[in-house]
Image (cartoon, rainbow, N blue to C red; front, side):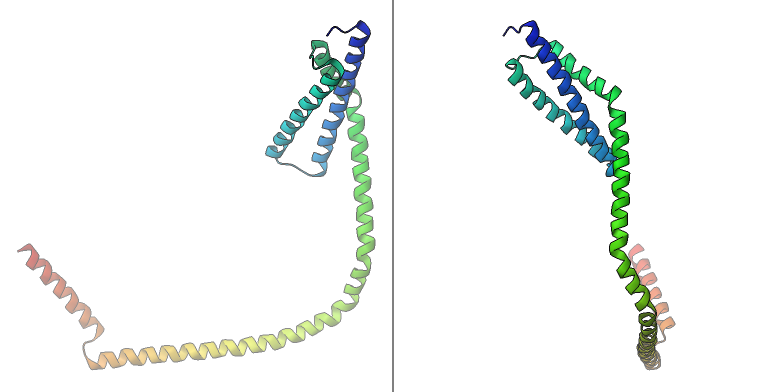
Length: 197
């Protein structure tokens, strides 16, 4: 399709405007990254998704305005529009957005403080009595746990005593433990000598 000079100028201005719009969208993505800190992997994925979306959007505009023909001056106009936006308006948009984010954070903090103030007052009023009740309950709990611990120590002492009694009975009934070890070693030594011969 052959475009007149006026049609080409309109297409060029449209692509410059499209480039500026893409720059603004990318700045919005950068502002989002300032609000919510992203890791490097997510930043790369977002950039890739942005450029894929930008390609489809540019192709849709070219399809509507120029019957799908991609012309060099249109691509040049798009990148020129992005460059023009980043050199002129980007800093202003980022500065204004930083200010807006700061004000929104302050307002949210103020609202949070207003909402939480009654709860803080209730906490300050109730803290001492509840703390004393907790201290009293803590003493009772400590006594209960101490008695349980004492019971566990008593039970452990009983197990040790029974173990010592069983060991003493075994020693009285027959060989002593050291003599048993000596006999086992002697048997092993005898078995080694028999296998060597």
